[in-house]
Image 1 (cartoon, protein in one colour):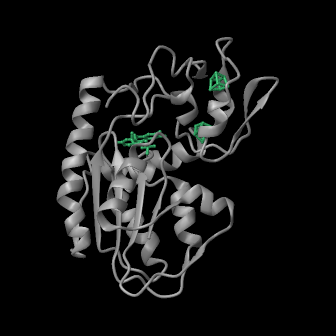
Image 2 (spheres, helix red, strand yellow):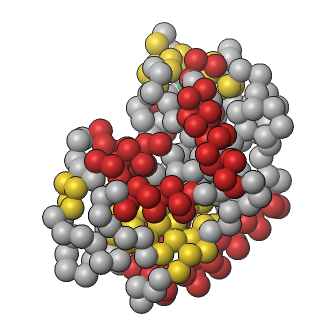
Image 3 (spheres, protein in one colour):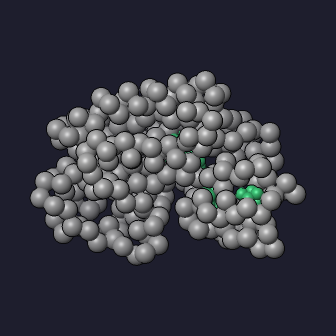
Amino acid sequence: MIFYFSGCGNSKHVAETIATGLNDTLIFIPEAAREGHYEYTLAEGERLGFVFPIYSWAPPKLVLDFVEKLQLKAKPDYLYFACTCGDNCGHTEKVFRKAVEAKGWLLSACFSVQMPETYIGMPGFKLDTEEKAKQKINEADAILTRNIPRLLNKECFSEIVKGSLSWLKTNLVNPGFNQYATDDTKYLSTDKCISCGKCVSVCPLQNITLEGGRPKWHGNCTMCMACYHHCPVNAIQYGKGTVGKGQYYFGKNLR
Ligand SMILES: Cc1cc2nc3c(=O)[nH]c(=O)nc-3n(C[C@H](O)[C@H](O)[C@H](O)COP(=O)(O)O)c2cc1C
Ligand code: SF4
Ligand code: SF4
């Protein structure tokens, strides 16, 4: 059983690749949470996996909230996570380990894969070049090819790219990000909007509706940026932070 979250498709690709390799099933965390589905039964010896993107050097809050509420009939005998990041993950392993240990479970394996950058909401943050994005995806696929057999064999391993100042980023920057940088009131649509509804359908949290043909954000945002990146006419902006920065989602113009 693999629980996953993905905004722009990078982690979905990783989750699907692992699920194919392990012949496992996928559960999309926001959907399960929306349905209040927190109780699951693992088959004897079944692996329990989590796949998610890194948000401000930690797992997204909605993933940690889900883990906290998750109820299993029996303790998993092999629990792993795979995370995707643009660069590095800080102390994500520690945070996730603590979250599962609070449930009485043990983390057996974890690894990170660099994937194309998706966060461009603030000045100084930009997308990867197309060449760099393609290179990251190819390297990520090689990491998956190497690590899926290790998951199949239930190996214990840890391969997380932590980066520099990891304690500081996870423990000081991340709480600030969760409190202040997931504010969706800065999202707006310009007159380029063609009322297609794509932003509504891609939002994993169902946080957008069309009002008078234009998107309206409702205050339940995880800042995945899927709405911004998927708009077919680039009509969505996040204040001035995103102006002129281009769009990316997994599968767009790259393969
Ligand atoms: C809100 C937000 C915060 C992010 N923070 C980080 C970070 O701290 N470190 C990093 O390397 N990448 C960071 N990224 C990049 C994503 O982790 C990366 O692009 C990921 O593969 C996106 O996955 P998805 O397509 O499944 O949503 C961030 C992206 C977003 C949207
Ligand atoms: S995706 Fe873009 S064009 Fe379509 S409704 Fe949303 S803002 Fe408008
Ligand atoms: S409103 Fe946009 S950024 Fe926020 S969760 Fe939905 S798709 Fe992601």
